[in-house]
Length: 198
Image (cartoon, rainbow, N blue to C red; front, top):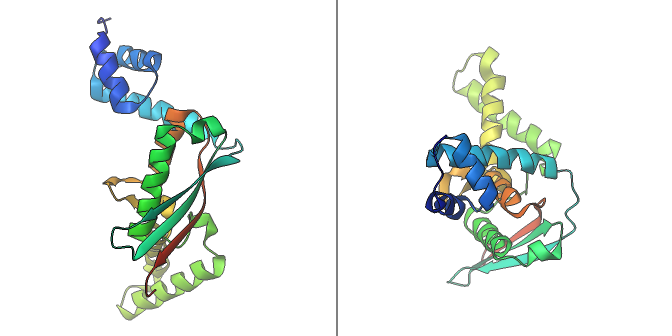
């Protein structure tokens, strides 16, 4: 097994926020390959985050963002398990990023589970009618409608939206990364967005 240098461990730690021993273990498992070690830590982090998802998140903070023109503002209630984590720089940064996301992308709901069933059915019916009017075969109209409902969630639900700073990452992925880094369950409680004239 190749010796893992302290500088490689340091670099991996800076890039991922993972603990020193976790970084050393990841580099050992991937024979010193930095990119594979990052993927390894992400996979482990997602597994850890899944275990933490059932834990109660009753602490946290409310974050506000006001755009420079003072015409758009947003608020996000971000919950975690302890006041200790709520005070960390990582948690504070995440809250600020989420407030900016809400201001920029105007989600209507936190998650797809929040979307009322009648809204989902209304959207499906609109997409079915559009597909039929475009002359699509009747046997694939429902599949087309389902696909478009998923697109609706990706624009209307915060957790399903693409992160404004990295289009390849969804907001839910960003939160999972922070759960893995901070070691606590993190959930978005509520969101609000205000815009002059809307």
